[in-house]
Length: 148
Image 1 (cartoon, one colour):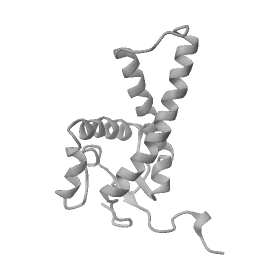
Image 2 (cartoon, one colour):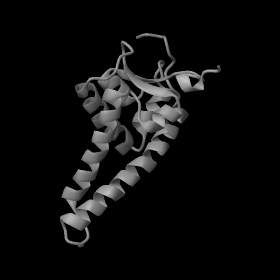
Image 3 (cartoon, rainbow, N blue to C red):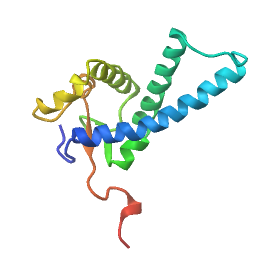
Image 4 (spheres, rainbow, N blue to C red):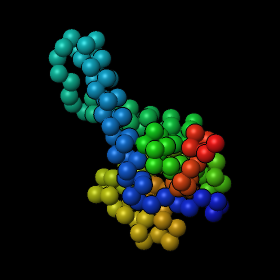
């Protein structure tokens, strides 16, 4: 693994997920409003198909940002990025594996994330499974933050 950037701390990861959760809830509100308005004629939406739809929507959110940008908007704020072992952007397959295993990390009451404390390189279960990592980019990684 490249040691160009250090692996991100659990606090930075959770902070980025908190920021992303606000965006995801907004996305869910918009999509649910559209479903209620155009598909159910104003009736409530519930059940397994709706829950699966919401899950797929979250998956699409993360997979898109990890694959094309390496960062979600929350990750940009907290100056972290998901990269491969070669410090490159993730492939679609790596993103899918990472997302599915991150789901297991969350569903297991966060044990997959807590694994960071037991792993010498501070890698979570989904980092290990997808052969990716989340790195901290430093204090001023973006051009807009450079001093003139």
